[in-house]
Amino acid sequence: VTFTEKQEALVKESWELMKPKIPELSVLFFTTILEIAPQAKLMFSFLKDTDEVPHNNPQLKVHAMKIFKMTCESAVQLREKGEVVVAGSTLSYLGAFHVKKGVIDPQFEVVKEALLRTLETELGDKWNEEMKCAWSEAYDHLATAIKAEMKEVR
Ligand code: HEM
Ligand code: ISQ
Image (cartoon, rainbow, N blue to C red; front, side, top):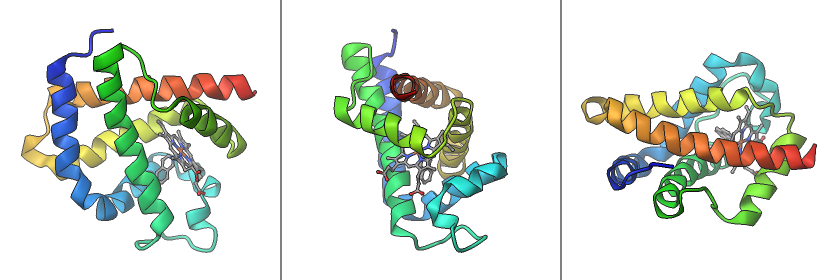
């Protein structure tokens, strides 16, 4: 794998800019997922009793934060080791968890697209093609690792 120091730095720097705003951005992120894949609505407990994306759901904020953070960690690991480790047990837990929720592989592209659009919206002028490539690669490796764990369960 060729994930460069520069790419790692781009992901880390943009994540630092995003982090303080994640409570608000989590709503945009989740809304974008549902715009791309409306049928995913039924899978999420945040929407059990409502049609609208809740603006003050702590779970939604925590999960959204985790996804961005794990993608950033994936960038660090790619640079250091050329593979994604996260914490081994976290990966197998997430694999099993998502299988139980009924998640299928193609939906990982939906979450990826939503993640990239959220970054683009928030970063505006600071967002560029190089950053997009770095975040895409980091996310793809994380998604591949989770999908591999999902296969173990099935
Ligand atoms: C929950 C991460 C991709 C659907 C979660 C949780 C995390 C997470 C950390 C919380 C687990 C818990 O409650 O213990 C990720 C990461 C992903 C990813 C890092 C990709 C790299 C996906 C995809 C889907 C999905 C592709 C399909 C649309 C869900 C659902 C839940 C969930 C339905 C349960 C939410 C709830 O109702 O509480 N995910 N996820 N995830 N994820 Fe993902
Ligand atoms: C869980 N998994 C994937 C994407 C998500 C987005 C918002 C909240 C929870 C999520």
